[in-house]
Amino acid sequence: MDARLADKSSFSDPKLELDSFLPYRLNVLANVVSQALSGIYAERYGLGIPEWRVIATLGQFGQATAKDIGAHSHMHKTKVSRAVASLTRRRLVQRRINRQDLREAFLSLTREGQVIYGDLVPVAQRFAADLSDGFTPHERDQLDLLLTRLTERSLRMLDREDEPQPVSD
Image: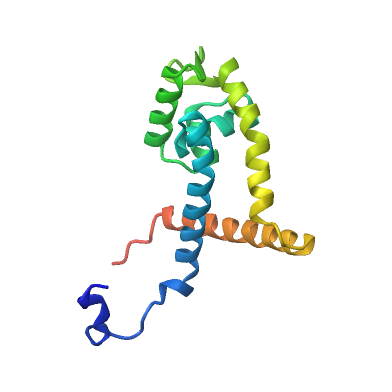
């Protein structure tokens, strides 16, 4: 450990213990789980996390715009754009221009993209089942409920940040 980090006297109270700080713990969990799962699809198909999310979203919904994919997967539009470009070059995703709005394209999986999605669905489902192995059905239900509530609460907090703040005189 860096000597500056070990010297606690240089920090003022109160302290933030990252190991018990919920946002930090959720971030660590999400990263560890995502990296473990990505090892499977990276090894088999050379897909990164953004590419997998695009494939998973298109596999679930059949067709979507890049904007829709970004909103559903909570990925920044730049990451979605790069992932779509990569998947299009690899002929896993196809684009169809929206004739109502030429700036937008409808995306869908090609036949090869569908094969990859179909192959990875049971692998991803098995991974999720293994992840919660040892939980009782009640604990799984509770976890689902708590994750849903945390997500909804976070989205409400995010919406409040986007609201214009009153101007003080």
